[in-house]
Image (cartoon, rainbow, N blue to C red; front, top):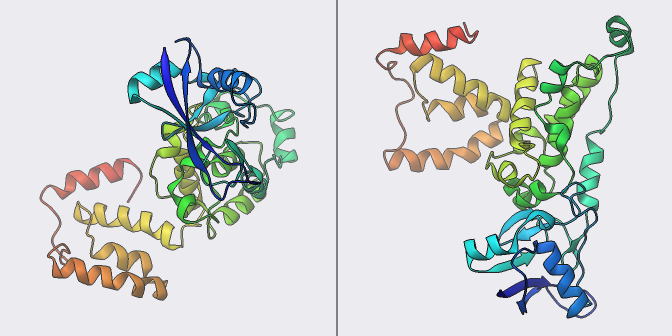
Length: 318
C-alpha cells in the first residue's frame, strides 16, 4: 500500500513556524499510525519527534491530531484513516505549546489538573460510621466512568472554549474534579470548597457544550457530561447565583411557566444582577427585534400547558 503522509513539522532552532512536510511511503496495510511514525523515524526521518510509551491505549502519551481529530496513534489504523479520508495528516495537539514536531508542552495541562486539588479529602467521621470508608458498587457507578481518564489531553486539544479563552480550566480538569465531588468519601466541607472554586471565572459555566471532548475521548469519559453534573451539584448546593447558573434556572422557570423558551425574558432573568453584561447584550437584542426574531416579553402560555407543568411536577418542581 502506497500512501502520502503529511506531518506538521517544527524545529524551533531553524523553523519560524510549524509547517507540513509530505512523505511517500510503501507500507503494510495492518499498521497503526504509531507504527507508521516509528517506521518513518527508523528508516527515513531520524529527526522526527513524537511521544509514545505503552502502545496499548493505556498511557495516553501518543495523543495527536490525525486527519483533524484527536486520537491515540497506537490504536488508529492507517488503512481505515486513509480509506475514510483519502489522506493521512498528522499534527500535534492544539491549545498547548509545541516543543518540536508532534511533541507538545503539557505543563499548562498539568497546572490545571493541579488547580482542582486532584486528591480526596475524606470525611473521617463518616468513614468510621460506615466501617472504614467502604466504597460501594453504587458509589462507583455514580462516578459515571470519569475515573477512566488517562490524562491524554485529547479533550483539551478539541475544546472550543480553551481555544478562545486559554484561562478556562478545561474539560479534563473538570471531569477530574467531578470524580471527587461525586465520591461519597469526600467531606461535605471540602465538596463545598471545590464547588466554590469551580463556579468562579474560567470554571464550569465557561463550557459551551460543543461536545467535541465527548467525541474525541478514547476512554468514553464524557467530560462535558461531568461538567453538566457539576453544574447540577452547584445549583443544588445553592451556588447557582451567577450568569451561568441563572441561565439554567431561568430557562427552567420560563419553560415551566409558559411551555416554551421566551428569548426576550431569558437574558433579563439571566443578567439583571450583572448590569455590565446586560448592557453588552442589549445590541444583540435590538438587532433581533429589528429582524422580527424577538418575541414579546410577556405572552400567554401555550395550549396544553398543564401537560408541561405535569412533567415538571413529576420531576420535583412545584
